[in-house]
Length: 520
Image (cartoon, rainbow, N blue to C red; front, side, top):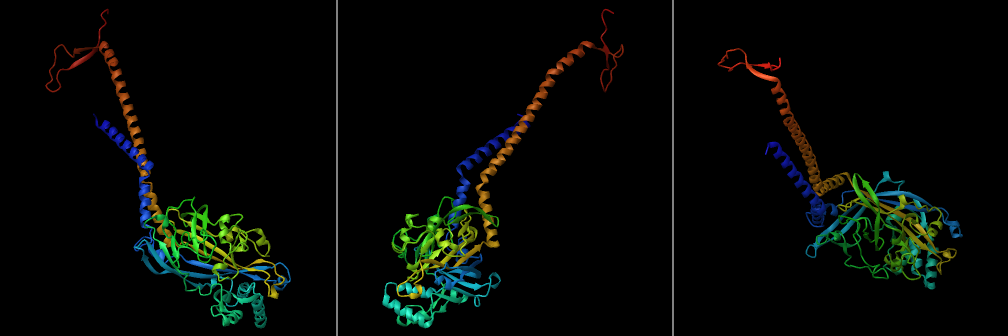
């Protein structure tokens, strides 16, 4: 066997081996499975893991924007006209958050923590000064007191006289600073004198700067990667007690700060939000890309806040059979000390059109008022998010309060917030590096198949060249005897002279002469 033949056989064997092994690994998804198992083990909430420190202190900056609805026709509205509001904002704050008092519990299978949030005002990202800008809106403390006394004519009449005496109306004008972070309300001061449990100060974000919303206990994800970051208990309870059904009182999903890896487009993402006193879910909408990182966009569908007629599963969120609102609204009074607070998406996005039509100035737009999460499906990392919610007050005619005599039941918007975050450049670079490693390792069998394909091409080229050279050799072998016979017939050998000359170096000289014709 020649060297050329050995080379061809060697290339053929290597080619076949690479292709067989490569296709076997591709079909079996061996490297992909190994990489995914490695991710499941590393992305856990335990000391020393890849994500633990960033979970405790998230590096990307979070911004909280507040938009208020300034009422421009109070007198006309009290006279029966349609209310008109004008959006004012944003008033932007940098939100700093971190996990405090972090400790492993239940033999390290769970971790408990308090999420501390603090806010710092950013003038350059705001439309004005919150200490100076005035907003006219519904008087939330007054409506909370009036609603609490509904059904008691004597108490209602007494409080109505108090309101007249101190000049407390059903609308109020306050600075943005007061509405957000608190002010001493004269009616609450009067009520607290006889009921010490009533707080004298009211603010939409009162006591929420530098505070937490209770202790959370999370699953670490070590036992099951799908449980990574999932809330086990809140304030020591595994279920809520605000709603009228077990399903509605379930605490499902994470707190919105962590999601398991290897996400699917078909799954629902559950998030428990203390602000709404319930869990909500999100569904896949579309593929997006943020800073070069691929992501799935999840967003709450209409069914999350749909009416019980549209989504029977939501019947448990009705405060009572008589207090069941339409699609797009959630009455959260059970966890707001009975205050008539109603949550919705901004500008009643995804709500029944009647709520939009009832207020002049409502213009729901998906791109500005949608809540969404952009999650990298491989790691579960949040690359971009916008949490948007609107605070409304349910106002209506209340017996014993003459000022409400001309009112019909209305969901009145007060303000909405937009809590947003985009992954920072350093974190994005780390995620991109991790995704590159995952891609290379997962696709290593394809590299083997590629090398096998190259070797196959080389093998075919070598085989073709060998076949071509073999054909040339055969052609020479077949043509040489014909040439030799012709020469022998036409040529004779004879000595150069009569006497043969001996040459000691070159031997005998022989001459070639044409053959003589015997007939000549």
